Image 1 (cartoon, rainbow, N blue to C red):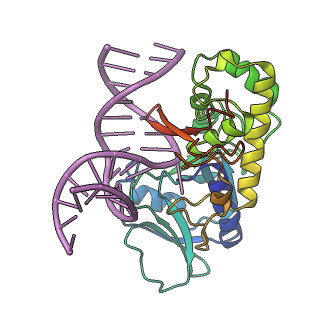
Image 2 (image 1 turned 90 degrees about the vertical axis):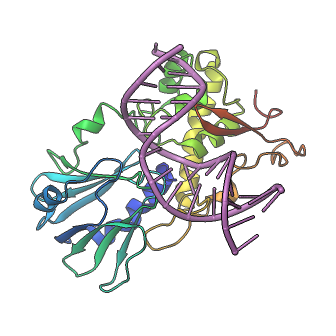
Length: 278
DNA sequence: CTCATGACCTGACGGC
DNA sequence: TGCCGTCAGGTCATGA
């Protein structure tokens, strides 16, 4: 479910609730998430620590704690965080609860259990966890993700360009929705091989990746079915989607009816307009 | 290296 | 109403 704009939305919403609070208790209701949780170890590592920073890297959330360690969190497909008043009834899919020093509970719910939660070493409050650093490419909204960077990467790859955009080691945070949307905006078919793109196309694509992510962040992300921000609100960007999920619908750019096509790439749905994308 | 496939899970939806 | 197939925003392992 969550790509960079959704995770950024969650990060911004959580920050004021978590920053400066201390974690008083941890309850693991479901240990079998993406990686098995060691409840006792988790409790030992975080209980009594205070929260010094809440930030995002790619699709990961990093909650820095006092004492040099932090929590590395991933929402998987259906993960969600909420901050609840004491006594709030538990959701059916509640997996982990952190009780905060203001007595509220910070909760992780996740129906499909693809989410991830682990303790990581943080040499400084702003450090990139080492285990992530070598696996994640640049932030797409940073200057490091430039036209030149995308051009060099694309030219060196025979992969379909949409698959390359979704590769977290190439650029961190782009998922299935925004990869399709960025290709549409740039006028490039998702199945085009990276090394067959022109320099102009690469430059356009880099700009459109940034553009679509920035707009989506301003909208609080995209809700297709179940994404919720910590305050329960849905993202508003779904109304701005131009191709994702619009199979057989008219193209919003060229106006041709029944124009948007769906294909499967690397097991994921891609959507494009054969008229507007070359 | 690339790529397709399946596994991990649960739920929603459409067709019959 | 129920059953069944298909699909879902992510990541990872495997084998061709």
